[in-house]
Image (cartoon, rainbow, N blue to C red; front, side):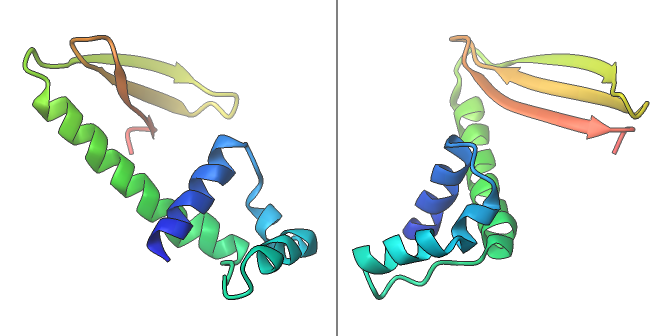
Length: 110
C-alpha cells in the first residue's frame, strides 16, 4: 500500500492534477475495473498524510545526496516580497556537479 500511495502522489504532482481528481467517480470506476481490491484514498488523505510522507522522504534523499558530495555544496539565497507584501527568503542547494537539490521558501522569517 505504501508503494501504491507513493506512486499516486507522484503521478498527481507530476501531472499537475488537483487532489480532487481522486474523488471523481470515473477515476474510482477505472481503478475498480483495474483491480477491485484497490482502495483509493480521498483527496484529503492524498493531499495531507500521503503528500507529507513523500515530501519528507524526498527531503531525506536530497540531504543524503548533499552529504555524499565530496566537494561540498553551494548555497544560493534569494529574497523577495510577494504581492501580499510578505517577505520571502528562498534557499537552493547546488552540488559540485551543478545539480539543484533543495528549494526552500520561508515567509517572514518562519
